[in-house]
Image (cartoon, rainbow, N blue to C red):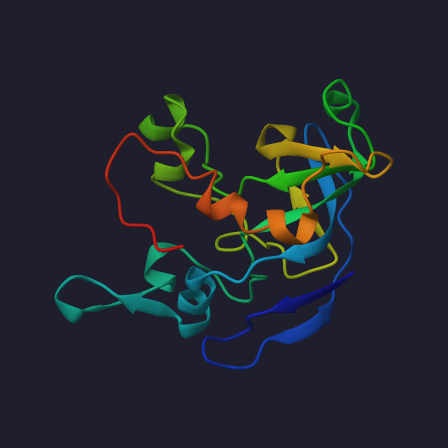
Length: 180
């Protein structure tokens, strides 16, 4: 598969050939025709962002490792699915991908607020995201069905839906800074 990756901050993205992942357990492989460009992607490319008092906060100090494939606003169709996921989804289903993945054991994750995770695994930031042909989603739990390829009916357009995964699916009961 081809992926547009940030190899080093402030350098042009490089299109690289990577092995297409194969889903295991509850993972799902999503074919990506659309991925939004969020201001957070620019921060990732810049290597950081301005924090309180004008201090530059480096992405690497926050756990980001380069190279990385950006893109946390992802919509696509299911390309491959594990048996564990087949009761809710099928190959060809059009889906929106929720990117704010946590590590699963911190206090925020344990109460279902993975977007506030102490050690996040967010797609397109900490692990490879949607600027690629395919993205490996860690679990079917991070998918929202928006239609299937056989049904034209009330399906959301994939290109229009991609940005919703950041702007519409971010959930928090707390006030937090999140620029999307």
